[in-house]
Length: 167
Image (cartoon, rainbow, N blue to C red):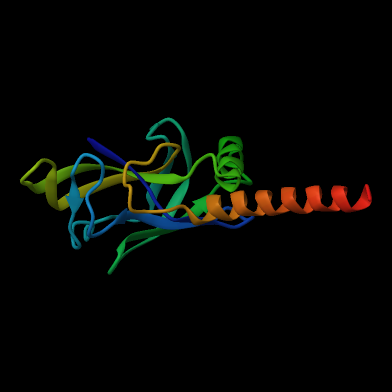
């Protein structure tokens, strides 16, 4: 099974609903692989949501998977009310410590790319994992940025309030 890590956009709400771009079309990952639109056409729902590709660590399911112009989008639910590990991972996502998605799949049809990597035209998707170290350089995490920005703003407000109250 191939495993590719890349940074992506993830958004999560307090109920554990999570969405993101599991693969960004148009740019290669760090090893030069490109997955073409249409490669995810046979993805069967629900898709297991794992942490770090650990088949023994399921934390939810991806119930919606759609290819759009920019990439392969997934939406699902971290089982925050049922699985303790899902609550832990959810906290890590909200804090910005877990910032990426990675897909676990078997390549069905691919061609070698000049300069390295592959162009993958068909695959069998097994799982989509939340990961700490993503591979794809072109994607960004929205929830981690939001959490990080919120913490930075809160810190700045606290420092400003402290400075003003000391005057």
